[in-house]
Length: 451
Ligand SMILES: Cc1ncc(COP(=O)(O)O)c(C=O)c1O
Ligand SMILES: N[C@@H](CCCC[NH3+])C(=O)O
Image 1 (tube, rainbow, N blue to C red):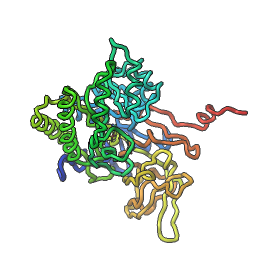
Image 2: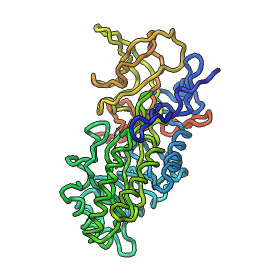
Image 3: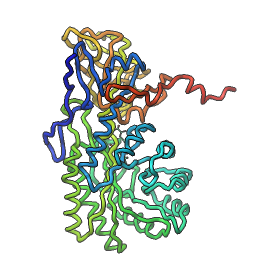
Image 4: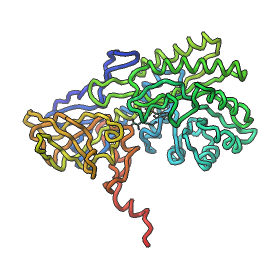
């Protein structure tokens, strides 16, 4: 069988600063004869037969290559994978082996990482509402850093420290930079719940209070601008504002902070030709701008940290669905309903996210039609891909593959309609391994208490 790349990885083709035109498919994706599609050397149709659908396929080499690309592009920067994008114990091992740190934001993520043996000193804990239990657990496990997001947690955390084991913290600030794919994810501006605004002095006040606690060591500042950011420009602006704040902290508090965490938000392609943030460009431009700005303010240059999530696992994932019905509406619309939907991928319903899709597993006539790929849930808004070009003879039983499915789909999946969350398999060198089994109604029933 002849195999051709579906679309090779980002061909650098800068449009705006640090932007590449990306492919949503893993580099290993190959289209073969008879509608075949392989990822990591594994036929998606075979995987669907073996593991059932909906099925999430994660390409191990793609995850590792993306993690490595960050380390190569940012050799002096600490790169932490944002676990909220997708987490499993096996993934934790890959991330550890590739030398990244881990950003977690709940007791659950922290416990899973710790149970998988991830080194606690490479873990950073986030959260705008950390519970006392979470803070205690983080202290007990000796996580490397905790990001302070509100004033109340400063004395609360300080009370858990002892003089010979202080806690390293970062203060999350809001630099006033608008970036991100949707209003719901723009966290770099005031008027949303995260961090301390730089403007108006809240950030400076938080810094003062942390410095006053002997049990806390202030490593530096943190900011997270937003999600699915397609260019480096907003990060350059943030660096300018944060260098100014660092200079202000030096002048007012007499300390030069040694670390600066720019969070995540690096965009990926969901459809062929979409803009994606290029880690190489980020690595070439951001540390240089930081050095320049620090020079201007007479500051020593802090060590950079970044927290990409989506850009590490997103393009490594492919969701495979089976078509259950094809309906021709009176207005000429065609609906292909599949066996998953908003319970495994809430992003289209939440943010109007746009995806691409391709048929898998059989030869078609070549003629196409415009189709809305819809989910199986009891909501008219349960549309996975609007206006897709799919075969004119699409029929129940066909398989559809949606790329760029490795981030913020399963991690935001729900139990809606008790459909059960899909299985996840890792593929590599022609082999498929089950990472997470499919959720069943028995899992739900096991949590019920009968009266
Ligand atoms: C604080 C923080 N860091 C990192 C991330 C990861 O973002 P992304 O997956 O878009 O890189 C997020 C999520 O947006 C976040 O809130
Ligand atoms: N879940 C969002 C991003 C928010 C991530 C958490 N700060 C998305 O899919 O785009």
